Image 1 (cartoon, one colour):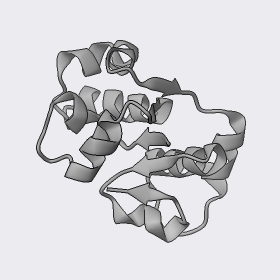
Image 2 (cartoon, one colour):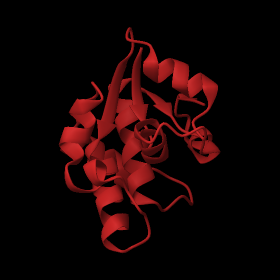
Image 3 (cartoon, helix red, strand yellow):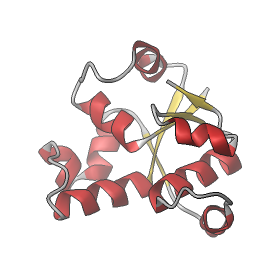
Image 4 (cartoon, helix red, strand yellow):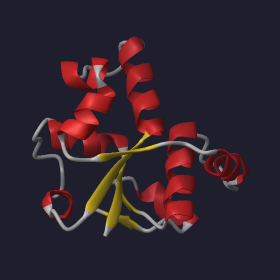
Amino acid sequence: MCLLLDSHAFLWWIADSDRLSPRAYRLISDEANEIFVSAATAWELATKYRLGKLPLPEEAAFDMAGAIVGQGFRELPIGVREASLAGRLPGPHHDPFDRLLMAQAATGGLVLISRDEVFDQYGVNRLW
């Protein structure tokens, strides 16, 4: 299975937090699954860190690519196709990071690992 981690899922994984659901933990730790972290997540975390809204482990704050690879995950770039779809998504949800994750999940056939139920309104395949 190909999984895309929402920002909180990625952070809770690298922090070994019990806030990560048991199901999410099992899916991420299953070596048969391919785990992706979006460039949108790197952008979101760096932005929130810069604004002082999010304390991050040093590895995530200063070397996001290294943190991703260090966990055995894969970077997921943002293409024009995904960016365009994210901008065209209907509905009231205005978070640009979430919109990019939705578009990437949809175009890449990825299962989104997230606790946020808002994704369900957009038909995203989400597990938690």
